[in-house]
Length: 609
Ligand code: K7E
Ligand code: CUA
Ligand code: CA
Image 1 (tube, rainbow, N blue to C red):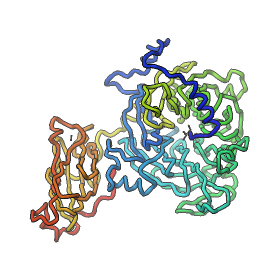
Image 2 (cartoon, helix red, strand yellow):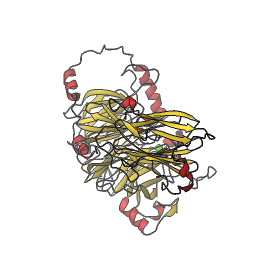
Image 3 (cartoon, helix red, strand yellow):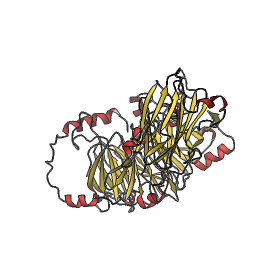
Image 4 (tube, rainbow, N blue to C red):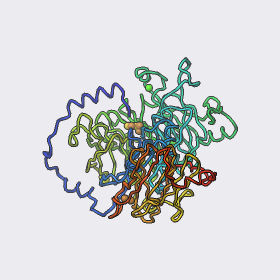
């Protein structure tokens, strides 16, 4: 979550209490060996779950093994990442797409995997970019970003959710309200929309007007409602005016009713998307009043309830997911932000201000039983999201819960005033919660989801499928496509590039069409070209097309950046750039006059999937 003054004040109080701790002096704790055993994954063994942590302002998704906490992969989405040859060069198609849709960075908060019958099917994972109103889609068979969607008519794409049970839409909430006509001079209250995105086509099908800073999203398990918390029903434009009312709301959008209205041509089209106005479609939007500035919204696995977390109120609101009536508002502690679930009817709510996870029993809370609080455990520190394995699905596992803490303070070796983010793994299999491990990450995971290894790992490809633009072995060569342009059709396989020598003339544009023709997993080759700001990585089967200027006359050794074989260091070649007035005949230069269409255009996609 982002900062609010009251919360900040409490954080600074907490900050002064944090004790500096020296290295390796932690006293032996009971159950230490048991905790170590619980998270130990022996060399060569696999973790039980893939954990997908949003990368926050890293613009990516971190993949960690659970329970070990080992970092397995970073999936760049909204930021270039040289390690994976992602969007690095200025002319990389993905980089150009990022620039065209808002910029080469992003702020990712909410990973949302595709669902079938209310459980993860291991096909896709969506992630929002709050800052630039984008939605990224990751293909889970290759762990790569395959689509970036700029969402029109909204700013601050914050809460997202897959519409259960079969991923009918991805809901994206526009948190930052805007003047309706986009003009700063418009005195009318600012407004926003919830967008409904087609998961396959990655197109916005329709939007629904919802006012009040639409924050976190979820859907009912039957796909009827899209729920969002709304914390600025006041429609204030500064912090103070956003905290006037005692109650804000949970917004429930009736999805079938919205679809019907769109089909009937209701709403008005803006930037190609129909926007439905709740005034014009009775029943479309229900506002359920919940206490002051709520944050998280989470549907229970059985589909009966949806729980809104109070943030500025020490309560959670349990809402009937069918009647939309508030059934109970039990107190849980200070600063409740998000709630997750086990398979035994318990809910777990993060308490930002108390720095705790509170476990409470849903049916007992509904019955008003005094002992509805089952347990509390301290976390370090100021927890934001928390997520139990499968807590967002219809089949939670009830074994592990991850606390995503906003501040780590004294938890790790100090690295300056800025410290890493802190995740703590909690064993929730028993009555009492046990914090069993802690691991840092770069900034800043907001939320996480977990997919069982036995669901996902069989779907993961060993090599990329050769794309339409792949260069086949035997088809390598250098083709002059115009007086000032050359296409290099290149393959790479241990431990050589073909061709190894590329001769061009100053002023040429060079299109590298490169295919890694390896057929075994993990045999990735890189292609780094000094002084051309070019470094790409090609996993087996991958093709990449990129256009670069020849640069200054000279000899440039391109080389493999991924250590691949005993001859890895020899895996390189030369780009020879002859001066403009050189009498030396460069590759295929003579054919320059009769090459029209020798290479039918440069493939437009830089990314394979
Ligand atoms: Cu950080 Cu989900 Cu963006 Cu709450 S949000 S904490
Ligand atoms: Cu190919 Cu190193
Ligand atoms: Ca408010």
